[in-house]
Image (cartoon, rainbow, N blue to C red; front, side, top):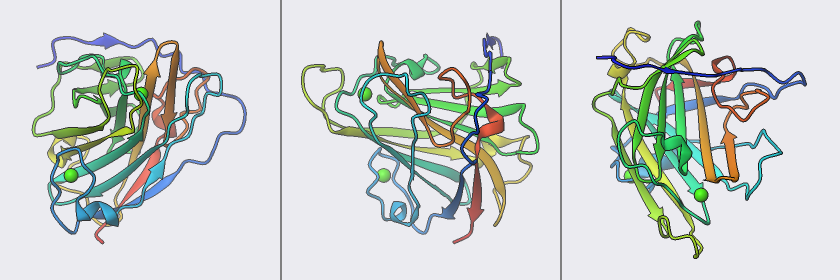
Length: 240
Ligand SMILES: [Ca+2]
Ligand SMILES: [Ca+2]
């Protein structure tokens, strides 16, 4: 039941200069089962091509720490595995639909019907494996009270969480999203060979005033803002 909406103040002004090309990724079917424990040591992950993030807003301050993401799928789930280098891991929020994007967090914005760019599902997940999921509607609303069922989410921290004086190595995150959650945008039980979805992958890192947004596909917006569905990358499902 949707009983609350959050109005977005997205003055989504696009930069005038030439923007980078929209990236494309082939997503393979997982050959072996994955254990969603936050560790990317399952043999299936070795099949997946890693994408790296760019930093489109040079005025942001603090270390530009590397992020790689791998994607896989099977009959039931889309899997994402994030690997975040991070010398200082911080995350405060602990409840579903808290504003996890204010923490050390990674995101996936997924549009399974790329002929339209009004609606997509957002998943914003902090280093404590807290999920903020919502439906984005036309740059105007986020329906955040809608909680998707059957998600699996875990993180692994190589360092100390919220201990500010020491030096951490990084954190990783695994999430499994059931294809059933994409109804009615995607009217099939699962994707087929060659199906294309639009997706963007993001990371918020650091604490104010040193905070960075990095992304797979540059949103092309003037402000550091990831929400531009016209600039999502293309993901192509492959059976092998
Ligand atoms: Ca794992
Ligand atoms: Ca951090």
